[in-house]
Length: 99
Ligand code: HBI
Image (cartoon, rainbow, N blue to C red; front, side, top):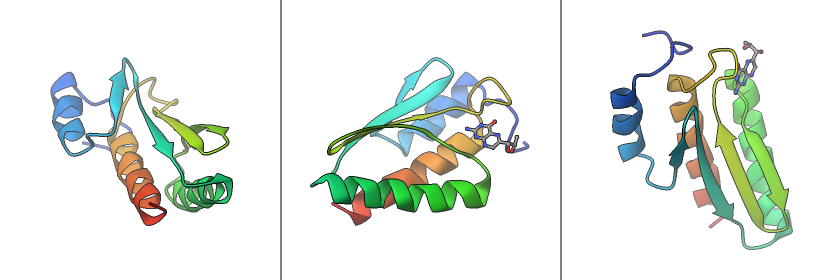
């Protein structure tokens, strides 16, 4: 399976078992991160940005004070791929590092 191949519903459901903070919304997955303050929120975004750039796969991020909302999908594939699940795990780790 190439990382940019669309995942099946079963693959998505299985992958999300390891990502309990994430919700599927059709062709994307989403989660909210509550940071302890605004600088912490920006540190999380910065850590995610470095890793997203390294994997050439980028999240949609909504930043509102201490609340970050991440939406992931593979735009070039028009849905969810393994890249989205991998990035979700990286986002969880960046959030945990600032908890
Ligand atoms: N990020 N989420 C997401 N989806 C894409 O299709 C995508 C991307 N970042 C970069 C990118 N595509 C292009 O640079 C090529 O890698 C396709």
